[in-house]
Structures are given as C-alpha cells and as structure tokens.
Picture 1 (cartoon, helix red, strand yellow):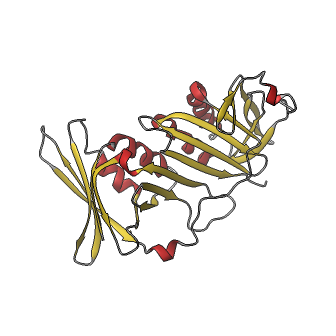
Picture 2: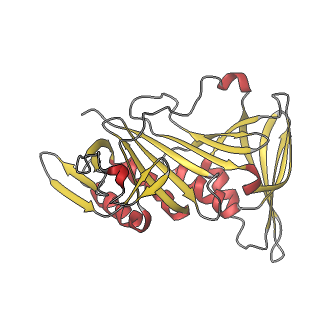
Length: 284
C-alpha cells in the first residue's frame, strides 16, 4: 500500500478536520484516484447520530500524488482527528511545504506529516492509523434523504445563527428549526422553563441547486408561508455550524420532521469539494 503527496491546501483541510473534531474524535478517510473523503459518525448509528461526509477533490488538496493498493488503488484508514489537526498546525506559513505519506514502524501503520519550512527546523509527526480493507466498508454509505421541503442559503447570516445557537445551547438540550419558502428561518426553544424565538428573513431560497427570486413564476403554486420544522440536538447543531469559518456558502436543507442537511461549500475550493452534515430530527 502506498500513498504519498504534497499538500496544497493545509489550512483548508485543517479547518475541515477541526470542525469535524467537535462532534467526533475519530474519522474514516477514503483515498481514491480522484477523491479524498472524510467520514465521521457514531459507531452505533442511532436516530440521533449526526453524520459528516466531506468530499474533497484529491487534486484540490494534494499535488505529486502517488497512490496504490491491492484494493484497486483505494486506501481506507481510521485516525484520531485531534492528532491530524495538531500535525497540520505545524504549518504556519504559505512558504511551508507539507508532505504526507503512509509508513510502517514494525507492524504499526502511520500517516506521516512532514512540514519543511525555511524559517525553522523541519517537523515530522507520525499519526497512528488503522488500515481498513475495502470489503469491511461495504455497508457504509452516505445517508439517502427525501428531497428537502425547503432549502435556504444562510450567506451573511451564518455567524449570527451560530451566536444564537451558542446562547440557546446553554438553555436547553433541544432546538426547533423551522423555515419556509418565503425565505424565513426560525430557531426556537419551546419547553416548560423558557420560550424564545429568533427569526431571519429574506434568505435566498434554493431549488435544484439554484437560487430563486421571490417572484419567480415557478413558485406561484407553492405555499410559501408553510413552515417545515425539525427538532435537533442543540450542542450538535452549534458544533456543526462552526464549519462556517472554513466556508464560503452554507445551505440549510430541511426535510420536515426528518433531517436537517447542511451543504457546505469551502473557501478557496470549487463546488466539487464540499462537506455535508446530516442531522436527524429528534422525536421528543
């Protein structure tokens, strides 16, 4: 098994890994000829388990790539996210060169991250990994969800949504999210102790991946005021939204009482590299 490459986007990858690490401490990495995929979920996939699937174009993140394995040149490894983030923090300048490669010491496999800098001594860090054969992963697949009832782009509002969620998580374990096709988003707490409701308006409605103006004729037969809602874990929503610091666009996709899917397009990369968060609705 062989994987060596120079890393072109260490800051972007570190931001994605860092955002994932708030929810899970381990992730599965799948390296193929064209994709670098990061997958994170609880080992026991219950109804309340958020899943994270980061799909990155291999050529967007790496250069001078060499990859080979007995699994049709596919490599699967599990590692600790904190270890990977810490290794990439050693890269402090755009002039630094970051290289990754798979290596073995004895029978223990490692992902080796080397940072060469003109301003300080080179740093090499070894991250223990668990290599997983392709046939072991046959049952792992990205969630299939119904077409969203409403999808809204948060655009400049994402950080205010994050601040509200940070405040609400100190008051409750569960948050209700509701949105409609008029471009309105509500995040609320409704319980015996407190009732609060924050609202954003004039958000961009997305249909089939495209933004829609409010007076588009294709919207005439839709009930724009109908609210579609889900109840989610307050902590998981807050930590999910922390990916905003690495994003250029975040789209909220709500399937009523089923799933919230956050589609995140990453800063500095084109639309072929993205992160999807799947947060199931809770039944209280």
